[in-house]
Image (tube, rainbow, N blue to C red; front, side, top):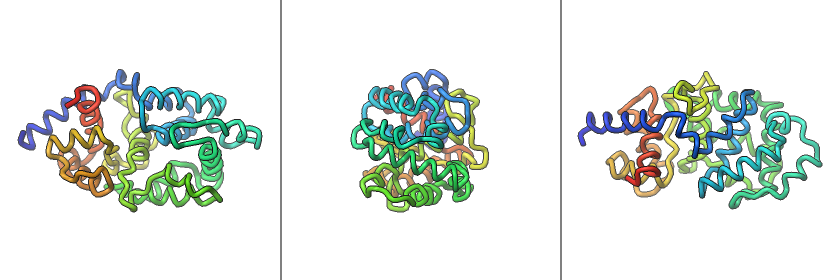
Amino acid sequence: MNKKQLKEFLDEKVVQYNRPEFIESDPIQIPHLFTKKEDVEISGFLTATIAWGNRKSILNNSNKLMQLLHNSPFDFVMNASEDDLDSLSGFVHRTFNGGDLQYFIKALQNIYRTRGGLEGIFTRNSTNTSTQKAISAFKKEFFSLPHQPRTQKHVSDPLKNSAAKRINMFLRWMVRDASSGVDLGIWKNIPTSALSCPLDVHSGTVARKLKLLRRKQNDGKALAELDSELRKLDPKDPVKYDFALFGLGVFERF
């Protein structure tokens, strides 16, 4: 395919997968359970944090996590007692355990009490063409309290050559327009032009088959390469092609 044909093909796939039916099997269904802005943000961030591995397991454990937070994530974060935090100790999703979750709650409380919330941190450090420095700055803020070093691995840093798939996915959820019924679009001060594709094994494999990506590793350098190519197809909303790449990989075994 030439560039024109490739754009037409991928645009068709975006329309095919960027629709409400997509939510039925996707972790984005968790923040869709809430209406209050802070509940959507916190549930989305925590769900994205554990969004790796088997999708059924991700959904099951995300729902369990919301139950542990009394299905009121913001209220829990802001008002959790020591007993409330102790109730999280048994949670586990792969290598993310109760101790990690307890720190995440404390860190979120600090961010909402002293840093103006999640949106503010990302907005202050984003540009019109990138959120990658914002993700790195967020990680620094997030781990400003005393913590176990192992917990840091659950938030990636693009400036250390990570593709930061889960946080890029979270930002897509928060920023992209909600008109299709999939993304939530509750953050209004970061442009979609700044977003990056959540690069994982599925989107990476499809991107390589379509000659959008040549680097073999799914790392920060690969993401920069893919970003560059997707921005040529749509500089205003490059991350929309996540739907096409992911759909082709997961649902069509492209």
